[in-house]
Every structure is written in structure tokens, then in C-alpha cells.
Length: 401
Image (tube, helix red, strand yellow):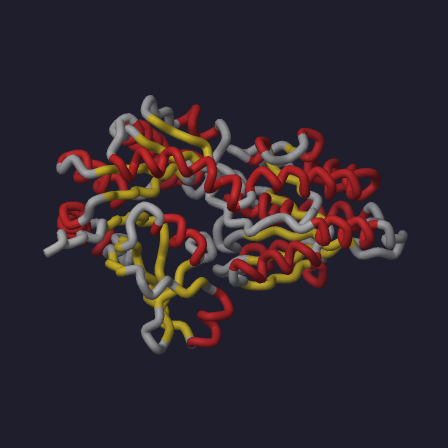
């Protein structure tokens, strides 16, 4: 009799993701966990289990299919309990204990562990994986200090402890992938085997997009309505859409014809009230969340993409905009300046600086910026990124130090 082949198993942990569910019990994720992403992880092990949190809302099937990414049917989902369900559960340690029991059980059952940080349950997965000598890879996709410091008063209190926490755990892993080129590496260093590799998913960059963009720009006249766009949750002030709204109000007074389209989920009450107070509510369009593929179509329709965040480790959406030759402007936050031309990086939180960049681009920079975007995006095609991941995935799979 031949030897029985044992299928290797991979555990993926990320407490920052919330799975959605429709009325037929189908599960969905946001666009950052597409089928392409799961195919990538299946090159490490064919059987994958994930630990995510879960939204309480039950979505109509049509709405869920339109907004979210269907979770791969081969993926086994395990639900982490959300500590912040209510005040009572937040101050209770019961949920934390249950999550730790789940993580410990799953780490022991699997051959490989990928922990995506920052995330409380991911930190615990790192600790347990090291304890049981499991093959461990850490993906660093965000900066907890920036996110918390720019979130709220409570966030400012937690920002430094969370910064130190991630620094500590990065010293406990021998293999890491950072989504930024330099920003996260400098702030949360790791002395083991590491690479910088975006988590963006691009199938390629089509020269058709560049040609169509150039053709469109050449048709603009003084009556053209310039459409500015941003993708990001509308209920989180650190995403910065308020600075764009303030800039647009001033630019309209200066004679520019502008509209602002915002893609993203959440309660838009704050931004809507701001637009009303400034008298430009008819110029601000809230588009709601869109599935990943529709984001690219959105980018093709707008004239300028602006990333105004106060916390942004990498700027995945900027790369998506660049892949369809969309001119881009961004704040001086985190890893954003690694992607955007210096002359189109505005001072974080300073809408007057943003006004200058928008004027510069409209008056003299659209054509050149569209070409720059297209060339820059070529560095992030799936083929090129997979080539970067290949070596560290191989070391991870083989357990090499």
C-alpha cells in the first residue's frame, strides 16, 4: 500500500475583518479578501481556515452580492467574538477568554499560521504559534498608532500602548510581509526574513485605460465639470473626506466647476452636515460601498483621485486608481508619499494645501499625472507581486529560518 498523503492546513487570523452574512447564510468579506487572495494562500496549503469577526446585520442577498466579495466556499470560517458588542461585553474578559480558547485550538490543529496585524487576536495567534513551534508568517497591513491617535480621545490614550504592542510582536516573528515600502518597516522593525509587498490585487494595467484617459483629458474645456473621488469609510473622520469638502467649497468660490464622489460604507451624517453648512450639498455625491471590481469602473469615471487620510499605511486604493491611469493627489500620511509624486502630496489635515494641489493638477498636471499613475501601477501587478512573495512563501512553507 502507498503512503497516505496528508493535506497541509493553514490558519489565517485577522480580527480587523468583519464577515457579512446574507439571508441565505452565504458569507462575504470586503474587497481586500478576493478569490485571487485565497488562491495566493492556497499555494502554501490547500486547506485554509480563517478567524474573522462577524457583523450582526443580515443583508438581503442582492445587496450583499452587489456590495461585498463572496467568501470562497473552500474556506472554513471561524467566528471571533467581537468584544465591542456593548458596554457590558467590552469590560468583560469572557469574550477575550473564548477567543483565546478558539485561537489556541486552531493553531494546534494547523500546520501553518498567518497572522495579519494589527489585531488583538492576531497577536495571540503569534504567541501561541511560537509556543507550539508552528510555521508563522506575519503580515503588517496597518499602523495602530496613526489609526488610534486620529480616531478619538480614547484612541489617543490607547495609541502608544498599541504602538508598543505591535513593536513587541514584530520582534517575535522570523518572517514578515509589510504592505509599505519603508513606512511600516521603520516604525515596527523586524530582524528576520521580510519583504515589502503590497496587498493590492491588480490583474494588470491596460494601455487602453491610459489612451482613453488621455483622449478624455484632451476634450476638457472651460465648461468641464471636474469629478474628484475618494474611496473610504464615511463614518471615520481619520479618512479625511472633510478636508476635500472644505477645499471644494473654496475652489468653487474661486470659479472651479467641481463635484466630489465618495465611495464607502457607514453613517455619512457628519460629512453631509458639513456639505450643507458650506452650501455645496448638491456637489457632494455619496455612492455607498461598491464591490471590488466596480471600484475600478468608478476610478475610470472620475478625473482626480484624492486620498486625504490622516492614517494610511500604504494606500492600496491609490494603486487601484493608478492602474486605470487616474491622476492622484494624497496627504503626507504614512506610506502615501511612497506612491504619489512629491508635487501632489499635500500637508496632512491642511485643506488649504490640498486646494493648491488640486489647482496645480487641473491647470497643468492632468496629462502628465495620468501617465505617471499608469507607469507606477505597473510595479504592483499581481504577477510582479507574486514574484516578490514567492521566496518568502517558499521559506515559510519549508520552515526555513
